[in-house]
Image 1 (cartoon, helix red, strand yellow):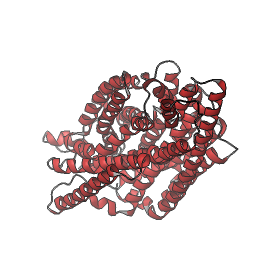
Image 2 (cartoon, rainbow, N blue to C red; image 1 turned 120 degrees about the horizontal axis):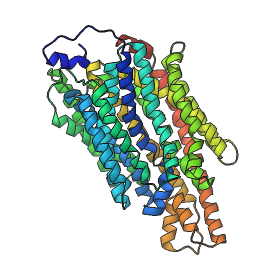
Image 3 (cartoon, rainbow, N blue to C red; image 1 turned 90 degrees about the vertical axis):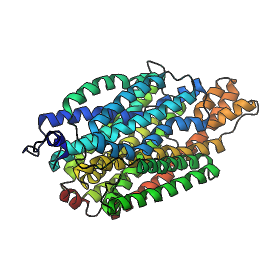
Image 4 (tube, rainbow, N blue to C red; image 1 turned 135 degrees about the vertical axis):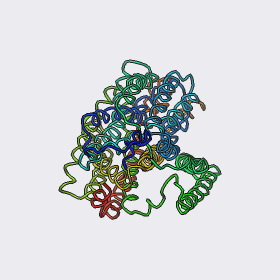
Length: 525
């Protein structure tokens, strides 16, 4: 039984006979679903070009600046599983509408944040409401598009919106910053919400699991106490190393995760509906697709973190100029997603996904090691090469993940997929961004005539070093900026070397685990 037809069943009728093809209304619904996808994914990266301006106006520490970037993805990663399961139970469209309204309201609060603490809190709440949006988009898509070819094209569109939106974020942010203050980058969400809500009510069918079982608050709480400490530990480890907070977070995450898994297994054994069917992870194809999804976004997030700062603070571009450097990569990402639908007819999924990581590794190599130092041209080429890989990987891995579960459980599966995405975003900024920050701090040399307060500021971020240099004489400013740029460039090289190693390892893992992925997506129609 299709849970898209749940309304007719609840009314006492029988689901009508229907063609598997979606029709005009289904494709119109896909257009509507792209609005929250673009909005949520753009907010992952829209701050990229605003970081120097935020540093100047709010004077955050380097750690606080990373929190501004990371807290959004952290909250998304922590809540997606719970919200995906909740959508299966209360209705995916209903949860999407709640999330959209909340996202719009909090965006206004974030836009007018008077200090970095308010900005961090607002970004956290955006993550909470974003978590109610994203599982609904992919699960609604899964239930609207039942024909295999149409579903793959719809998922390619979804993936292009997700990964393309992440690439579009800095571009839109760059344009906005060229005309308005940094707070305006959040206000662009408001008109999107005003359009989304009425269109969703009109065009999107309500769907839910027809046999959902009762809500399990204990499992939801355990999922939160697993994911939130785990993602916090990843981020904290990158910035502070192994300390008491890292150890405590890891311990809580392991204990909660073990209890969560045991509870899901016990509920399944008793015939009760678990929050997540943990047996899915025993499927090598499903797990391999998840890991590939995560590592692909990790590379993207790490690249955007350093490229946005390098183009503005080292090359000296205005935000909009720097954003335009990323446009070819955005186009390549979207085009590769649609191209994947055709390429998979002649090449296996594991070959294409493995090849996508080779492209990501090549992108990092071009950015860091072609020429004496990175340039705008080398970053443009690097991001274009990387964009092709990301477009391929995101389309195919999401198709594999969502196709290997029944449509009635698509909310939970969608949440697992997007959790991998968000953890990848956290890892990109926490691990790769943390390595870049640590290398910068260790390498920058502060002139002796700089006071202790400004010394600490200059050592925090490259943007802060530029602010300190503005208050020095020409000679002192030149010495500070020369040292800061050299330290940042060294950080880019080290970060890129690590990213290349991770990408090549991921290519190997994908090639081994995705054997049979083409068969899996065919058998679970």
